[in-house]
Image 1 (cartoon, rainbow, N blue to C red):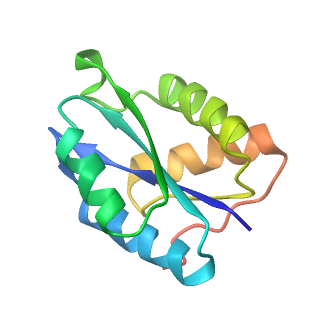
Image 2 (tube, rainbow, N blue to C red):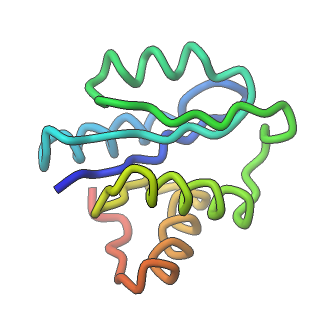
Amino acid sequence: MKFLVFIETDSGEVIASSWEALGAALSLSDDVEAVIIGDKISVVTAETIERGAKKVYVVEDETRTLFDLERHRANVKNIRAVSGAGGFLASHTNSGRDLAAALGVDMGAGIIADAL
């Protein structure tokens, strides 16, 4: 199964638990892609590939420095449709849990929170 992992950033820096989510996805599948949303994230994109993601979807926008559930949800929902990923992982932050719950509703799927 293909997994899509949300790599969460804060001011261009990766939230460390995002790497844990990526590692968990890689332990489940060799087919792992990632999505990064934010500003000044080109270095994060390269590191995500180095850490094992086969492909990284990037939404780089200077107005996206703060998490906005509805905008992130719309972006990730569209990216997941393009990717064809059957699973979605996010870190155990407030933003990650909110995004996973919102996508679960969109996908008609349950979520498992704080499992890593």
